[in-house]
Picture 1: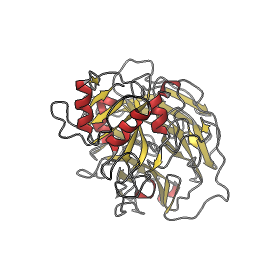
Picture 2: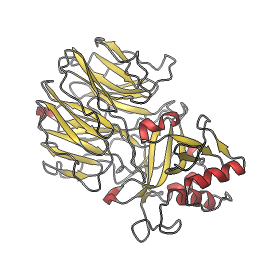
Picture 3: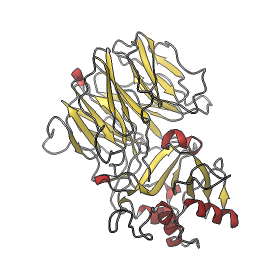
Length: 456
């Protein structure tokens, strides 16, 4: 069993989404109307992947329709009366008073979208992909990108200047890149952060500084950004949200723990929830009296990319959603025991691949080696391949999880479908989608490395 971990961007939520049952109509960036009846109450409210605290309200989400790609980011309107959600394919969905100004959903992107930032007046927004490409919509203007520069470090965030005439991009190594009227105040770019990458960035309200946050909880201030504290020693930190005066911020971990620093007030979190949903980030409402957490597993997705139409992907996608069976570890894929390997080998079996129904991930690897089908982690996988997590291949004794590769982006990032994953809706393990993420950096995204792929 595992929890998926997403990336958080400034004022933005990045998230690994959940697949729903196959056969639901696909949405790919079309405008989405606000939820009927408007806001559904202040305080804690959880529906459709959005958890609201304090003065934040739930305005809706695409949780009832299958999307063309996982939801990866969220941004709030300036008055906090609406928000946008964006998919890895660039599709944009709007709720409350958030307007629809276009999307990249119809484009065949080279790399997945990872972040979103609105303009100061909320009449436009920027999307950024992991290769540093920037897409501007509404009154957002294009000031440049990293997409034209060859680099092997993923961009993970974007933050806009207060007047909307510039923005910063940040990559996993902490490199900060300024465009338009955004000024450069420093970065961690000279440091190799492979084991503790940057996951988030936020700017100060006056635009004369910013914070860079590492997954280990370290917060690095630059310019006029004050040093207020960090969350070292906690589960991976995935996001930061800043108070209106810039004298405080909230940090959130992937297990839902929230900590407040400076003048930020603790308004609630999933610190004591059992089971804890996998949280992908935090976004603050105006006035500093509310914020949203984003549940990484609640967004239904169905892959529509033509490369994802391998038979094993179709079979695996048909099972997406809460686990079936008698509860506990019982499932339709084998006896009552941990079942990620049982699910993956069942999917191959149903797709016509003659593989035994293995219950242990290490047994799958041993079978693959014996049949000449094992691929190193540096190999470029294909949809339908199996992905094996753990510390092998020298020893497969530690092989905790596996899944089916569902989609491979042109830049090499992948989405996977995994059984006995979660916890999903209701706290039960589920068949879920994980990604997009780069295979060689799986440990940074998932808490465990990939040691092999297996080809059918």
